[in-house]
Image (cartoon, rainbow, N blue to C red; front, side, top):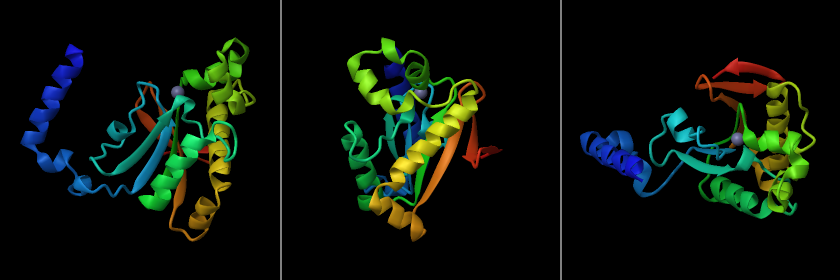
Amino acid sequence: MQRLKDGYLAFQHAINQNKSRYLYPAAKQQQPHSMVISCCDSRVNPCQIFQAHAGEIFLFQNIAGHLPAPGSACSIQTSAALRFGIENLQVNNLIFLAHTDCAGLKAATENYNTLSPDLKQWLKDLKTLPTGDEISMLQAHLHQNTENALQHEFIAQQVQNQTLKIHQMIYNVEHGTVFIARNRNLTAF
Ligand SMILES: [Zn+2]
């Protein structure tokens, strides 16, 4: 806990030095432009990666950054988060941020039968992702998330109206770099 307390004191000091840097003007009434869905791996911190101020990113993290298909057993929380971020907060970007060395994806594709029942339930849709080439597996996962998102009528409609854009990104935890994944190609963000 001391490490966290030291961090908090440094945060308070930084706020007092530069309020605008840490307290985005919209912080009193959040108006995020982007929703990020990512893994809850402790090395993946989207607000840090994008240097986002308070109020900019509506963040939803879970094991493997998974988005189950609407109507499936695990989908209630993710569907509610999408509904809130896109309909209530009216974000313009839905970003799926996968990452390298993902223990959740490894567990789903390599050790599925050894998992506890709750993890099996959560990772069920991911156990058939292609293995071997890590980037291909991450791209397949991002593609699956996007397809599942588009099954929501309110998302498909907004994408069609161009009021919402879906982005697929991969974060390399070793190098701290982000790539855009599109059509099986990776380009630097
Ligand atoms: Zn992960």
